[in-house]
Length: 321
Ligand code: ASP
Image (cartoon, rainbow, N blue to C red; front, side, top):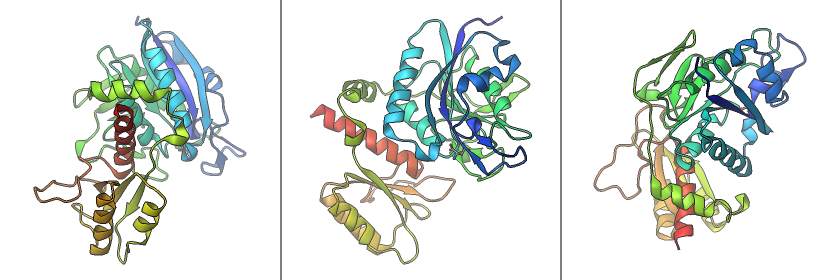
C-alpha cells in the first residue's frame, strides 16, 4: 500500500456548496461546507493512504483575490517541503480555477503533484459530482511520478497551462483546448496521454520568494483585460492609462487582430510605459507571432492567464530594481 500523506487544502467553491433543495443544482450558496466535513463524507477517501485536511479559505471563486492566493501558495509550499507529503489536492470553485492553477504553476513550480479539483453541483445535490472528483484528484496526487500543477474534473486530467472552463453547466466543464487533456482517471487508475507538464523558471521562483513578504496584495501591479469587438473605441484604454494601469492584456480577435482605434490607443499606452500583451478571444489556437509585430503576443496563454503572467513579470521586475 502507498503510505505517503496527501494534503487536501479547502478553498471553497461549489464543491463545498449547500442548496435548500437537493434537486436544485444552481440555486445554492458556494463555499459553505468545511473541507474536513467533505472529506469525512467519503468513506473510501483514506483507502490508499493517510490524508490531512486544512481549510485555507472559504470563497466562491468568483470572489478570489490576491491575499487568498498568497495564503494558498504559502500553505502549498509549506506542505510540499515536508518529505512525508507526496502530493496536494486543492478543492476550488470552477469559475477561476484556471487562474489559481496558473498562478501556483508559476509561483510554486512543484516537483510533486498539486491537483486542483472542483464540482459543478453543490455538496447537497441529489447526485453531487464533488466526491468522485475529489477521489480522482487523490488518485492523481498519489501517482508515483506525477508532478506539476494539474486540474482534475469529470475524470479528466488537465495541465495548469492549458486548462480552461468552457461550459456553464455541464459536469465536464473544462477543456485543454488544442493541447488536449493530459489523461483520464478511470476507476482509480490513471491513463496518461501526455507526459506530466512541469516547467522550472528559477529566476521567477527566486524573485517571487523575495517579494512574497514585502508586497501587500493591495500593491500588486494593476493589470486589466480589455477586448477587441465591433465598434470598440480607445476610450477604455485611455481611461485605464489615466488611472495609472501598469499592464494591459487585450483579448484580440482571431489571430491577434485589433480594431485600428484600439490598436492606436494600445500603441500609445505602450509608448507611455504600459506593458501590453495580445492574447486572443478565440478558445482554441494561439496568436502566431510575426517579425513585424508591434505588440507582443501572450505565447499561447489565454487572456486571464496572460494577465497573471504579466502581474508576476511586473512584480518581479520591480523587485529586481
Ligand atoms: N461560483 C462557483 C465558484 O467558482 C462555481 C463553482 O465552483 O462551480 O466558486
